[in-house]
Length: 235
Image 1 (cartoon, rainbow, N blue to C red):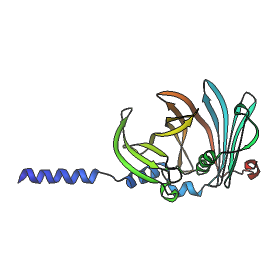
Image 2 (image 1 turned 45 degrees about the vertical axis):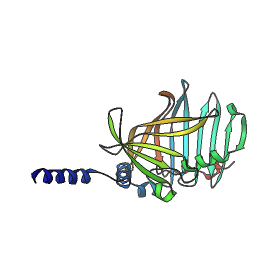
Image 3 (image 1 turned 45 degrees about the horizontal axis):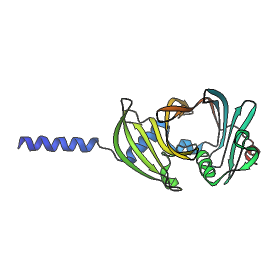
């Protein structure tokens, strides 16, 4: 009888410690400051540097939350621009053959639309119609994490998030990306969280393929609810 009682206690303890995917996401969202706080932001401007192939380049990102985004990267005196507003997008990339404003492709529009939303995708998965699944726990660089799979409503694209079991911070995410005609698994590592107006923003993100870094972004400044001229998003 004593063994049975202890077994029942162990089962009860294990069950109490288990968490659902919704509980993990709620704690992750709370760690960042909460979905409501992110949704109340009207505009944002982020400035910093992007490092690729040994080159350190200036980057500026301007966002009207949920409506528009524009990214400018300065490369050897030239500007690479990606812009989107209300369903329309365009780009300028002298190094990719687009020396003047050129319409974005459907795939690029999908990605741009995601970037207009300041709330992280996983935090806001319900309103966007995505599906999530908790795939257990996994150690990532000696950090015990919850492994959460998100399947996009729009294109069935899968992104896997690794969230620290200790403090519910985001350690990394993994998703497939089309690059140079090939589908590659890209790892994004998040670091340097900074609290701004009660919300946390990851100021650094490093992207890797097959264990090799190919790009990193470091923001020096994030400004919220600043004045932005909507004309900068127009083609």
